[in-house]
Length: 82
Image (cartoon, rainbow, N blue to C red; front, side):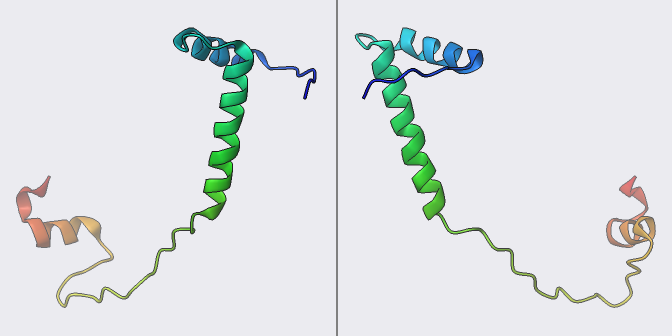
């Protein structure tokens, strides 16, 4: 298929850089290869399951005051925590 495509400057620069690294390939080859990779990765991203964080109760240790972080650090790490 032949079409006219306007490529933004930053994308064109990246394609040109990729072209310089690709020996024996034309600009058309590099553009098609890059589009294929992008479309493949887009499909793969859709297939991945979203990461879910499950909460759980950690409980509270007796004798610790969670309202004052400075006091809590001193109780846990000692007076030299600073």
